[in-house]
Length: 147
Image 1 (cartoon, rainbow, N blue to C red):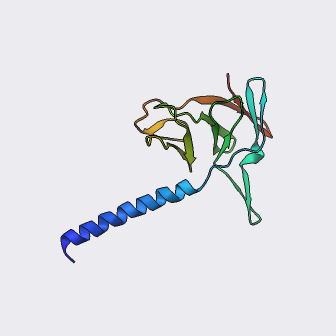
Image 2 (cartoon, one colour):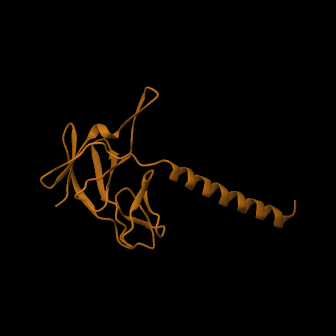
Image 3 (cartoon, rainbow, N blue to C red):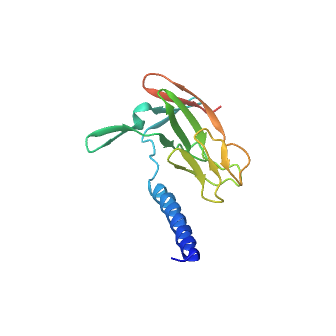
């Protein structure tokens, strides 16, 4: 095989593999919390929303999305470790598009900005972190302070 052909085939394989990985991650849709309540300034979500049961096997989701008619954009709630959560407003700081969860990070489909599970920019063009909210928990619920 000639060097030029080898390089061309190798590059195409890398690009194809990367595109396939991104496409497959995009196919997994985010789970939207079924019950979201607003009590005073707190959005209340049950911790049980993170439980996923498939074929009699229970696992924990790492992110859920909460929508409420009082909010302009949804909020992503990431389960970090044990009883630690982050709540992130899904409005991109670049041009105001809705950001989507992809595994353990967030992507703005508008211009490709990426954010980690704490809302910090990992790839531009966005320069500012996403808006985050204070989170408290008890035995059953997660409380997101919207004030």
